[in-house]
Length: 334
Image (cartoon, rainbow, N blue to C red):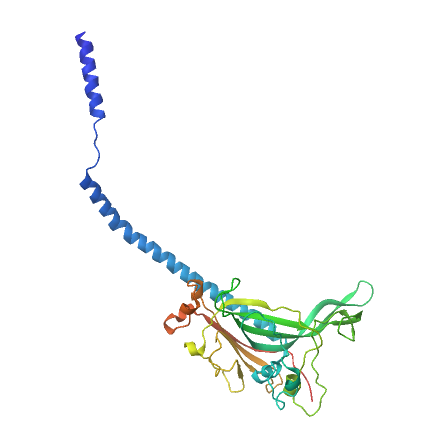
C-alpha cells in the first residue's frame, strides 16, 4: 500500500512539471520583434530595389531590341527602293498647293491615305520600290514564273491625343503599302488592263514619259488611281518617343546639306522620335536616306505621357539608333 502511494505521488509530481508554462515574457517578445524589424527592413528595401532595377533594365532592353528590329525591317525595305521622296516631294503628295514645284497639287489634293488612325499622322518615309512576286505568271500548265512589280510604301509617325486602348500613350510607326498587279488575262474592277493578280485599289504607276522635266518633277506629280484606298497601315513598332522640340526633345540634324529632313526641324510641335533625311537623286542617280528612331522605355514604367517625356538626365530611358541606306535600284529617265 505504501509503495502504491509512493508511485502515485511520484507520477503526479512529474505530470505537474511537464504541464508548467515556460513561455517568453513580454519584454523578451518586444526585443525579438525589434531585432527582426532591424534585420528584415533593410533586406526588404534591398529586394525591392533589385526588383525595380531589373524592371527598369528590362524596359530599356525591350525598347532597344524593338528599335533595332524596326530599323532592320526599314533597312531591308529601303534597299529595294528605286526612288525616295524628299520633304518637297512628300509635300506635293500631301496636297501642297504649289503649281511650280507640284504641277498637279492644286487639282489633285492629297495622294496619300487619310484614314490612318491617330490625330497626328506624319508621313516620314515615302518611296517606290521594286518587289518580287513569287510564282505569279503562268507559263504552261502548272509551270509558273516569278514577276517584279512596283509598290508605293509610306512610313508614318502616328500619335494619338486621347488615351488608346490598343497602343501606348507615346508615338508609334505605321507602314502602309499599295502595289501593282501582275499581267494576265483577267479583268479587275477599276482597271482597263488585264491581270493574273489585280493591283491594289488606288494604285497607278508613275509616268516618266514627259520631256523637259527632271526626275523629281516627274515623280512629284504622281497622282493616285481611281478608287478608294482600302489597304490599312500596319504598326511596325510602338513606344516611340512622343516628345516634341517645344518640349525640349533633341531636334536632330542631317549629316549633309544634300539631305532634306522629314519632318522639318522648324516644326516644333511634331515628335522627334522618328524622322528621316532624304536625298532623292544623288550624283549616281540613286536615292539615299538616313533614318533615326528614338524609343521611350520610361512609358513602360509610368503610364503617364506627361511624366514620360524626354529629359537629358533620363536619356538612358530613351535609346536611339540610326541607319543610312542607299536604294539598290535606280530610274533612268531623260
